[in-house]
Image (cartoon, rainbow, N blue to C red; front, side, top):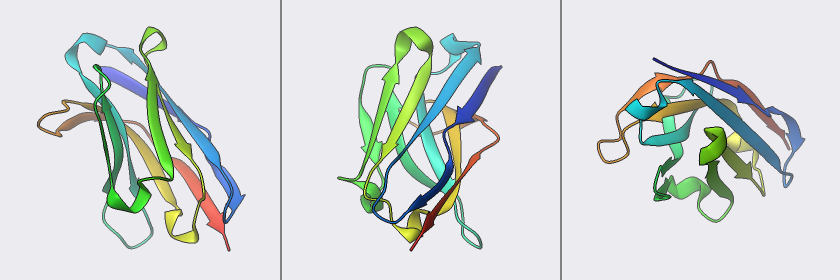
Length: 118
């Protein structure tokens, strides 16, 4: 099992920035990717960004150029730097871990709310 704990959500004005963090613990050897998904009210959960243990990344088109995912392998922690936030970025952001190539995420955090006011 892998446990994921998110932090860093909150309320920000449009155009502002936030950084989310996710710390993983447990059977880290069983995963090779960590990332972020989000779910807005009334919408399906969607991929935001994912990073492999080797540093490969994949982003949703809607966040490219604004969000940056990174990881500190020694700390088993992944970060999501969110800049130029828009009201449509408002959602619960979930940290996830699993396999990069199949995009199958086996483990999920409880989520952290990001609210962007206009």
